[in-house]
Image (cartoon, rainbow, N blue to C red):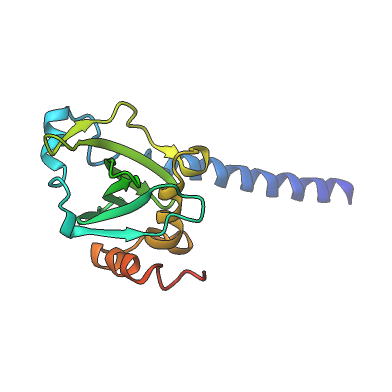
Length: 179
């Protein structure tokens, strides 16, 4: 009886191990369609227009946020890989602002910064560190975590369209979020 149970256990373990290995093999590596193997000039042509004040919607970045945050509604896009891209504007009480074009992968809760805005020339400059980074690992990404949790990635899903994202921003949260 011990041999029979041991054989069943070994068969079950072999099956589970085989499924795990095949699952890893079939998962394809994620390639960002915006910038994968592209030079800066090509990427620049894919960037949105510089944000205009009339297209900005404020959002709540949480109780500890020291800046006011806005999303440029004209810049929001959702691509075929389910990456939501947007322009975020952070403004201080003294009027200084930072402008960034970024993307969020809801599936993995990662953020990537593609470009930084130059307020004097109203143009984009390539971000120095343009790698996918976990939102939880970045202390300076409070606003992006709030965007992901309450507006763009409700319950870990990605919004299906820019219009859905804009509705969530205007409402103060996505309808699937309990807050």
